Length: 228
Image (cartoon, helix red, strand yellow):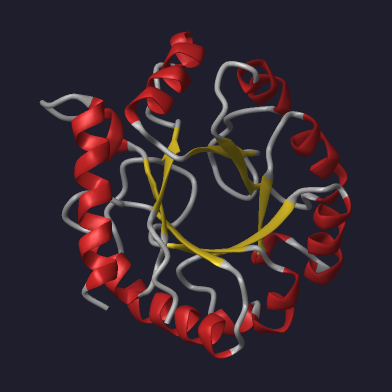
């Protein structure tokens, strides 16, 4: 079983958008490994968020990695824009792609790592035939579209099944979880098999400092991975 060290990803949805550059710098200083840009189009999900120009404006401010989580219908025409904006990883939703194999290949052709996300109701079988093209598999632990939602613990068997599939096939794929990730949930997601953890509200909100919150999440993820 893969027991790589946990990667902590920050969703900037809860950030102060009027100080976005400062918020991104603050996350890097706190020890976050990379930023997730939750890109929403108002169609695939009801919210609307960042465009590539916003991401590009923040790219030179920090050295940590960027991933674009495209919660959009028909992402194919826009793929180059997110790579040009500085996203090393581009994640598309299996539910939004008519020809998923072609979309993942296009991301790789652009020089980025290809990720695929699954909504809670979407079975793992939806992506097993394209895992050879995938660098990152994202199991959503909430329904996408808004921050601050409650973690869906019923997704843990799907996380475990994804981990087993990756390990049995000897694939080098990061297994990410996103949605309701906090000190009270990150350990269970790690025990189920995740090694990448996207947190938003749990990083931005709390009585202690963002550095302390980051360290606490990483420690809980470490403990969960060790307990597998």
